Length: 401
Image (cartoon, helix red, strand yellow):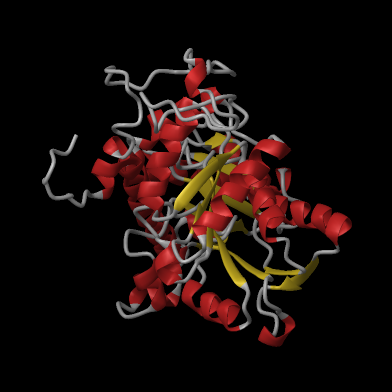
């Protein structure tokens, strides 16, 4: 704890991930306890009982009544998320529940959005049926937007890993009185800070890099400090409780455990992915390479022209790296279908962000993408091992064709 008169010290991301929740729990255990209780006792002093006032004077930052409202695990996780994302954060049961609650809070008449994650479009379709929400193309005319509408940008993009210029869309949204909301799942801190480029709300599927071990579901919304938080945050807290999309206590504890190592994991995963992408991009040019024979093209933010320009929007937006996810377009659907079974270190599974590398023939879960597309999520394994595994798989696939 800081002594009286001692100056506040600005901590790095790595230190915040470990210490941003210090002081919330009054228990002396170093490792956070796992609290599974759904209900919590009121004070034993009847003189202190006040309807709808639930602050325990002995633990003012860790006061709870019922876990549908708040619980000790998610409260500590939200303290870390608020600190590292740069805006007041709330957790939800999943990434899609976070996106849904964002639409509930803003209640726009229009949302401009590109293809991206198909689940978000499913939520929009439901909201359209309930409220008449209209979906516009991401690059619609600015005049098509009205105050209170949303431009929603996913960057890097699912499933390709390509980036979009947030400042451009922020300027467009704000000129119309609309909000810029950003799904930054594919580039968590330290890779990208959407608030620095005009975002009003930042969304994450915390299932991915915040969880980082493929063992929890989580969604996150963080609010820009530019928003009127005294109005927005209590309303969102209330709406989360009423609609029941709170994250479970077990997931809160798992998320708290995982955040401690997020910077270590994400930097390594992003660096490895960028190196493998650069290698693949060179191999595609070599007619003697098995990559040339089976891969049509690779997509990743690091391959965008702006990545080579140190003064570009992309270099400003993603100073920490270009993300651990990229896509492969194979030369046929049959090749895309068969490649995953030839890999040893990549699990053929959906999702991403875990410590293990994954590859997915994306048609398995997304009917909107080309059927020759594979999404690759790089884990924390050694770069040379992953590269060797990819090379042997391509060699076997090329020999069959």
